[in-house]
Length: 111
Length: 113
Image 1 (tube, chains in turn blue, orange):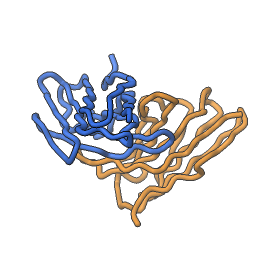
Image 2 (image 1 turned 180 degrees about the vertical axis):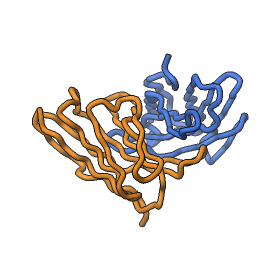
Image 3 (image 1 turned 30 degrees about the vertical axis):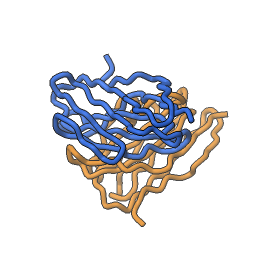
Image 4 (image 1 turned 60 degrees about the vertical axis):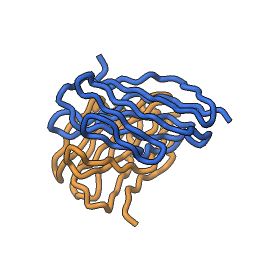
């Protein structure tokens, strides 16, 4: 079983819609969760971090964490064509603080 | 400006040759990491180091070697033992705490001819 799982997509949404990206993880003791955005051929950039259950909002982005279900999601409101990228979910595993990445979900925002 | 510098950005290698990818950071971070990314895939951890003169294998360390002689530097050598080395290599650094954000370099793309 993969430690961090994401649907590879592509997830296609029209401009202005809400894009919902999901991620599940296997380690029950994980405490830190991150969403990175990666454009083709570029390095990942941090979008959101979340550490406690519930929602965390930053502009058009909302991260949601449910530790009981081992589930973290990212909502992008008012999606723009410039949001088209691969979104990587990452989880800090055990006491070594190493970050394990999912395989990413490719998002396409149609104009 | 603080950041992570990887070099070279593009590298071509003949089969059987070792190559070394450079990674330098001036963020004063203790922890450094090397990830590999294949087309359409996520990042897989090769090696990581949380302190100078110490490093640990990640999930795909076979065929790779690293050193950490200085806090600022964490070079990765791709040896001839790595059977499928063509990939995008990313170096990152962080403060080694549970909520430490990873900062990435721009990556090095290695192609074996």
